[in-house]
Image (cartoon, rainbow, N blue to C red):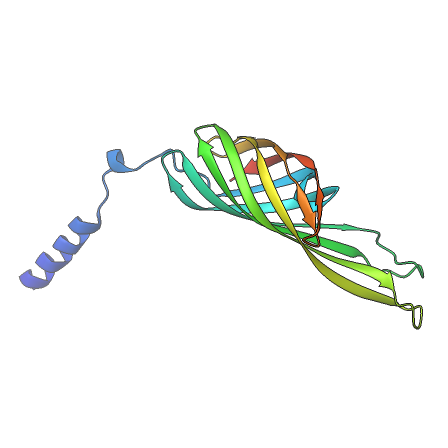
Length: 169
């Protein structure tokens, strides 16, 4: 009985964290935001997750979605969908420099010229991000402004930019 009590006491002592050792300023790893223009086209809703954080260097992944043209040319519900995906590197404290690269997937409806029925076409486009971001470590408001060029179909370079507002949690 004494040996069992001793083993349990040692295990509990090893796992106990003192209150003064707890880091109360944990970095919030999730962000949801609306982006006007940017890598999603004319606007998108995005989710971002920090996957690496060391001092003032962050790496995060991003996934967004936007839909437009809810009806196709024959007036049926058949929305075009754009999905921006990226990996971003951030450097700084509350005010950060942001650099990123990714893919924009577009799935749009076009006429099939043989039978004039709607058909979906999926294309990939490269995207880049270079900009400024305000995002404190704690939960709350996030703002970003960036230059976001897109290489459509990996052939046509388009200058583009975006502004985002969101919330870190």
